[in-house]
Length: 146
Ligand code: DQA
Image: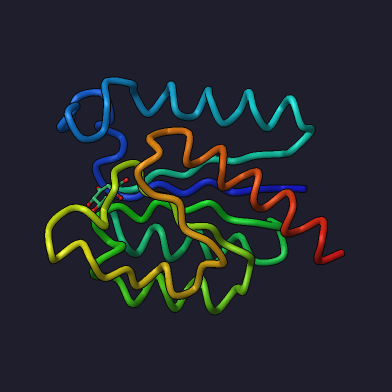
């Protein structure tokens, strides 16, 4: 099983940006956490972070035929990007949406998720643990699909 973890804009600033909302742990520690979980389960995992919408679209397209599942936190592009939604639909790789914060309890403009419309599951408000829950969900989902 091969999983791609995609993080959108400003998530490279974890640990610095709004620690009251996103915590004090860094992007590097997020990568370490997910890598350690995947290693313990024999899951191959790759990571991609970009502040650019088109780069995220490119990475999703390149995942076609390569990855079994995608974990994606599109960050602010969640609420604006039809292009990322369309890319996820185009490759039709099972994808799980993750948000570190409880976006459902935040501003009105965060209440729409375009990418979420192409995802089989969403986790929000669980901090970094949401990514682990997403990988676990994909493990079960992909095992059942076989
Ligand atoms: C986020 C929530 C988004 O609304 C925000 O723009 C982000 C991070 C989260 O992980 O909670 O950058 O996706």
